[in-house]
Image 1 (cartoon, chains in turn orange, yellow):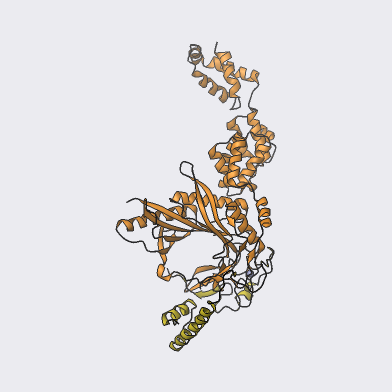
Image 2: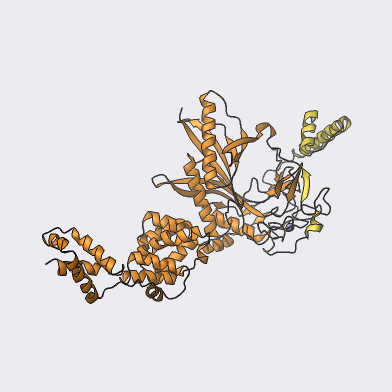
Length: 476
Length: 97
Ligand SMILES: [Zn+2]
């Protein structure tokens, strides 16, 4: 039987603050274990948390960008559970008064169909430490991450396929990166995804029993885990079974999930208002100020790129994926390049190199100005497009002037007709059979003669000039 | 007034990771019932139009700027741990493979 798939996602994004949410410890990933801890984030008795104002600001930014209603009065809450990587025995989070609610996000998936998905809430909370396994019969705990500020973004169960879930994730990550509130690095765990999945017969109103999937460390893993769980649930339902409400862990190596806990051992968190922190109060003025600081967001940028630069959809979505890429592209355009040509160079050649070399665009060895000069040389016909690629590759390691490199490589197109005329006359003598066939109307031999001229000129002849010259000299 | 049952006391004790003796279960069952009885008494007060109070101070926010302060050195951080290798806190294994 075919079922309707219902997916909702809970995203935890680590906030890119200098210090943790309740103490002054650093938030750097990968530092030596327990070197970024203090009595507050270790949960020592007698310590008190003091809220980092940047965490409020970042949550408000995310809320405004996702068109949420922002609460002027919100509160933190204590979520009680015992786990070794959270030494206090509770996590400070938000419960019934989250900072942001009722947001939305537009995604495109399959045939570019736009769809608006609901954001249920965004709340602030603290991250836990990290358990490290493989120490024999012991688990080792590193509290460097413990107390790092997080926002949890909960979507409505509005997604109907793994592709939509992926599109949502891509878009959300893009927005958070534009806002510069999170690094959103899934491998390093600064963006973590939990998915709620259920199936129901088409047309049924109420939702089926859902399962929760955790531990998916890439976009690909999210898609694969969702497909696998949809298939599993479908089989259970087809066989007349019932879905058990469980939490599952995805294992990327085995390509399968296993049950982590069942409903029976579901947590009883006993939330209550956090007594160690005062209520959070923000003003309309504060929000207006934050709003004025928001950068141009992906949707707006896409519209502008389409209107101002007349780029195709594919080029736009590639350039806008990373705001540093689109900024770099715009610098090339501002240096005087044709936007369409510039977009081709950036999306094909520049991105190819930065992906091959695993570098960011800021580390790309050719400056936007230099690339625009190269594009101009091609526009002026001083080199061919083909030669342009050679020059580009050379520019990656040679920072000389573009014109100098062209000269060095001897790629300057020969537009000097006298020289070309000599070459063409030689060819006319050499290939008398082809010449008479050409003169008798076999016009496709033009390509043959052009090839010969290119060969003789070592690829430097300007094709736009040689075609009419061949017509003139060989044609009659 | 309903008494807090033995099962409820054991559930709460489990959540708090407390190992109670039979005598303690009996004692807490009575004490918790008394506390809830007192709360029930308070619930009779008309609180219409009164905002719930979660803090006794008439203050909000008290935020700090996003700046770093010195952390502990690792040796001090782990010195009170029941088990450590000088770098990590060691705890009984949490996930079995
Ligand atoms: Zn700390």
